[in-house]
Length: 267
Image (tube, rainbow, N blue to C red; front, top):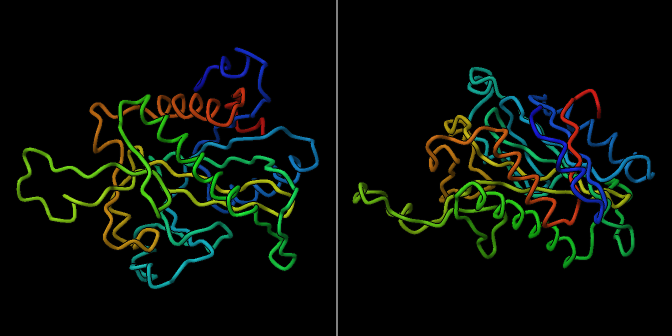
């Protein structure tokens, strides 16, 4: 079994969050599953849920997406086997693909004080709460990476999890931007729907094909490099090891008991 059920039975002091490892799932299928589960969670039929999965090669644009940040034309997208989706999360364009751990937390964040946009079927938490939720996701990933032996952090004014800039001792002629700019190792983009349930989430680069970032200006940030755990750790941690670290950190930061159901059919 990929992740032991011990996460869900150690203690019942905190509410349960159901965890589902789905494997490789097409983006549109995972988006539809979020819609289904969010409705059930809002109705009290399902507990808070964390979906963990990988996607085939996919570029997604959020609500602030700009088409000029997609650098490949249709012919190149077809050659690379990459699909493109415009979605309702925050942010600009990002990449998803095999070797990247994607997490979709479907959490009932509460309906009090939500500002509802009926036309968009969406809601916005008060700004402090919305930003606070994103910061908690970042904190969770930073803690998970620390368990794997990677030091990371937040960057004021930017969303995501970042590796602090450094110049390897064997690279005295590294480009200037790598000497002063942090590298993004995890992207975050979220939505809170009209029922107060969170959607979308995070994407942590474990060992993806980094060449796909050549097809976009990731998150609209032209000058910032992107990194993966494979750039830092040898041997590269397995996806199972990364999931275990994420589950422990998620439970600690969000105060859940993580109940792992790693069979896709159990969703």
